[in-house]
Every structure is written in structure tokens, then in C-alpha cells.
Length: 236
Image (cartoon, rainbow, N blue to C red; front, side, top):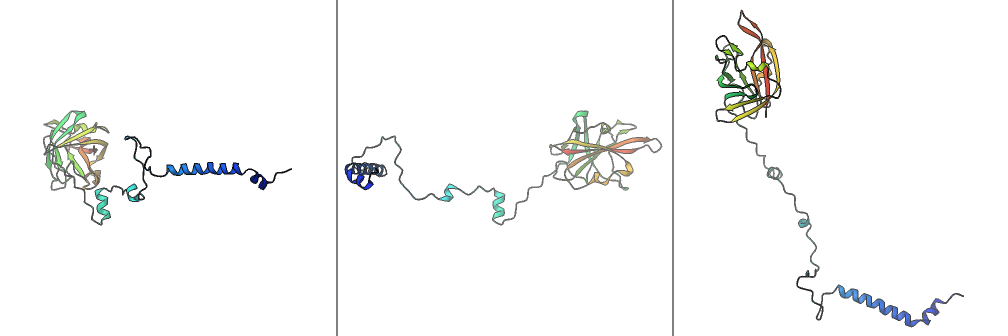
């Protein structure tokens, strides 16, 4: 036969009361742990951490500070005009060095003649910098240097080695201010003199160096070479 639950509760009042008392004791002890210690409470050691007391909610801006903004972006956000980068100044070349070819030659400024041809210094050991072209070390433009491949009286020219210069070789120009500007050869081309492309003398574009000398077949009647050897180099 099933027992009457109500009767069971009536039959064991003592057990129910003792259970309630035990449950109440647990709640009281749990409550004591959440209260601050009062008189007679056990004092924590001096090196124990202080009790944490509830305070104001954390500031979200303090938890997530604003990102650091660099000066240029800060000026743009404030509506200010961007500060232009300083223009890199060039230097007047006074010496050309081809380390792999053991060539070191003085450089002088030259211009174009009445017929538009580039005037090249007479001593083949000297190289001419076409002064309307860009200064080496500048931010843009082509720097053009030219020289004789040889001479009837002066022997081989400083740029006679251009016909053998290969990609990746180093070229160094020394400026009048003592600065050295380095380049790496990127290409070597040979053009008929009548077909020398105008972009060889391009005033704009990225900075680069162009070295020009004579090459190809030699016409003994006119005493001129048929072609130009052109070496292109990029700043390092």
C-alpha cells in the first residue's frame, strides 16, 4: 500500500524542522561571507590583499582608449591641408666611377650645339653631363652623361667599356658637394644614331641615369660611328 505523503509529513515533524534549521544555517553562513568584517572578526594578515569593495561602473573610454593617430592623419581629420614632402635636391656631377670596370673619369657640364647635337668633351678620358638634364640624386628625371668611345690622339675613352657593361653592374656619381649617388645598370641598348629614341633624354619620370657613347661600324670617310651605345641605370 502507498503511504500518504501528508501523513508522512505529520509523522516526522522533527526531521523536517531539523532540515529547515540546517538549510537556514547554510544561508546564514553564505550571507556572512558577503558582509564586511565587524567587531570581533578575524583580521587578515598585513600582507593579504585588501577586500574589494563595490565601486562605480568602469569607464568604457578608459577600457578602450582612443587609438593613437599620427600627425599627418590628425591634420587631415582636423581639416588641415597635408604638409608636402620636401623635394629631394640633386647635385652637380663631377666624377663618374664604374667599379667593376676600374673606370674613374672626371665629369664636366656640356650643352647642345647649334644643330642640336650633344657637345661631348674632346679629351676621351672626360665625360660630359648634359646640363639641361636632371641632377643626380634628385627626386625625378633622367641624368644624361656622354663621352667619346675613343680618339685619334687620346686613345680609348672612359666610356669605351659601355659595350661590355652588363645588367646589375654598379655606377657611382660623385657630386660637387661630395655626395655619392649610386645606380645599378638595368639595360644596355644599341641604336642607329638617326634612331636614338627621344625618351633617352626625357626630362620627367622617375630618377634614372643614362650613359651614351658611340658604337657600331666606323665610317673612315666621315670618321664617325654609325650607332650609339646606351646604358640605363636605376638609383640604388
